[in-house]
Amino acid sequence: MTKFSHTIDMTIELLRKEFRVRYKQLALGYVWSIASPLTYAALYYFVFKMIFEVKTPNYPLFLVAGLFPWQWLTNSISAGAMTFYGNASLIKKTLFPRYLISLVVAVQDMIHFIVSLPIIIAMILFMDVKMTGAWLWALPALLIIQFAITYSLNLLTATINLFFRDLERLVQLAMTFLFYMTPVLYAETMIPDRFRHLIIIHPIAPLIISWRHLFLGEPIQMAYLASSFVWASALLLVSQYTYNKLQWRFAEVL
Image 1 (spheres, rainbow, N blue to C red):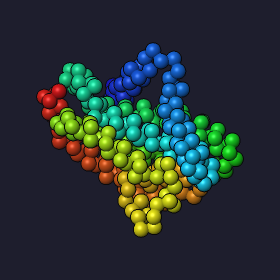
Image 2 (image 1 turned 60 degrees about the vertical axis):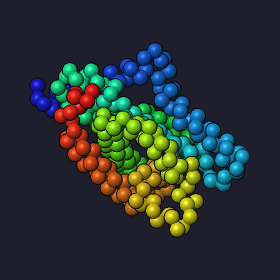
Image 3 (image 1 turned 90 degrees about the horizontal axis):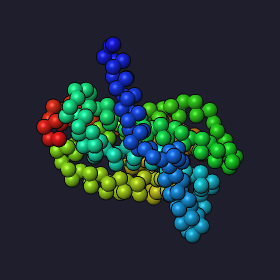
């Protein structure tokens, strides 16, 4: 068996383990994977559309288009702090590429996002929103970019948290702050002109905006896509470098 095929087998086995743990004794696994973003979408729709009367067209789809990719992002990153701690026995007893644990977390959350796409497509059809040819190339491109970002941030937080335990709480605060600083509940056009140029350097906003443009049938902005690609590449380099520098001490600190 080659090293590559052995790695694939280990990844599949870890993925099976994660699914068994997450959905143990849960009969409605698929339902729970989409319940959270749909619940938040309903809540935000009531607050912003029914009470504050936001004028955004197709606002239910607008919310779902941002909340579903955000849910994938926040699930993977929030789990990062405990990714290695939760597998301490495996790390201490087995010699294998530990980064696979973070990889599996990102893969699992990507699968949850993919199986939620029929909900989004159903809303697109129901609201008579045009599905453009951009789906053929933008969907896989955005999946790859977001997977790289979520994997990188999970690996980075999982590694650093072994040596700096307060990081778990800092990540939770950072994700809450980032949520409201990212145009998930509101359109980027609502950002004042003097700040709108900063979107391009935001680590998450261009990605969320690109997802929304795809789902709402609007043109994909290549500048936003390029920004997301740069962030994904940079985070991959930083996270892998940090992991390689510190992994030899994992068993020691655990």
